[in-house]
Length: 523
Image (tube, rainbow, N blue to C red):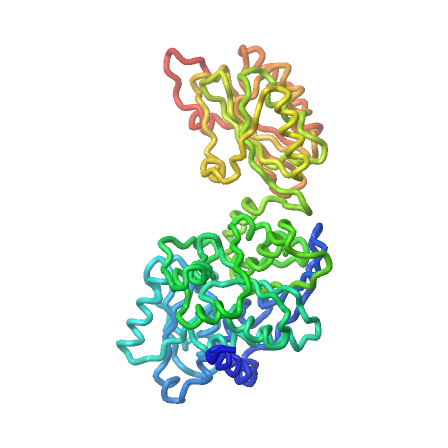
């Protein structure tokens, strides 16, 4: 054991006597994850006094200050959760705190800082990143001769965060075979790994970072702290550009391996937590589970192994839920979501023929299609299935000399850029339809409409509701066919289609624009 690790261990021992002045131990809860045959327990830090673990380190650090230091006040930089911990400690200890936060900090985290700190805290919004806020906070602390409360790179902060691990050891639910610890600056991982390794020497500690946040992994691999040129902020609680000066040697010594996870994997893990215990962690709070799910899929976890993840926080702006839901897909057991771009001939009912050929058990969750000027069309289908089912799709397409391309990570698909060429639409009509969210419902609708129309636009995404909603464009060979289809659509209401209405004239003109004299009339 290094001298630094021994000092950290002693700080955790002392922190046990301080942190419970503002918070109670948080519970462990078992997660039931379909298809994963390991025992998975979650440390519920989202149930702490600030809905995140950061109160532990902030209070321990501030409680250790001298009366003179506290009387002068403290300064902190935070993307959200550390600021709440500092604010809570300031109110409890009766001192002033200036919390520097990026201007992009979600309102829910700013409001929480004000709620916990009251008159004892002042928020200073500066810069567009944690790094910019941190620089400004250090400058202010130096100028005013105030104490800077570091969110991770301080032994007293790490000592407070390590009390989380002490509670796990004392719970009686261990020992754990594998522990997944998310890494931003490395304070949580250092403190917890130090404690776990002392009491469970065989426990494997896995550090988890975002693929575009992996500053600690880079430091360990290269042997030196290097600043990342870009840091993704989807998991804003772990968006740190460079590994800590103190946390780097500790993580290098204590962390057995590093795993990186994508934003989509984090979103899938958030969904898995919701499905299991009806809790929505913030993105950084689900990173450990994302790594565990990745390891299970890759065969690194043996059935029956006992694993621990830390739900490190649940302070997320409600508006982010839509992004998480779309990125998280609907992963179930060994099924995964893929977006496939399929080349098709420009002929009537080609899309319908493809949809009808999807293997049983595969769920269609997204369709993006718009008619373009070409002999070939390129619709995108989001499908949820197993590797075997995807292979079956490939086999069926190969029989027709067709091959789908995986476009899951293509930007135009992520942002739903559905292009179409209005010049080549004949007597188009756009409908908004609602249909039962069950296999075959939309096909039933199109089989009826196919007597009169050709599909020229389709925008649908699974929402988790009992009804599906889609914007559908149909084109017709003649006005008579168009009018007959409109009448038939009215007759379908309440049967195959629960609701259908045509776009208003105003919206239709925005969709189709004004036609030139040489173009086919939309009306």
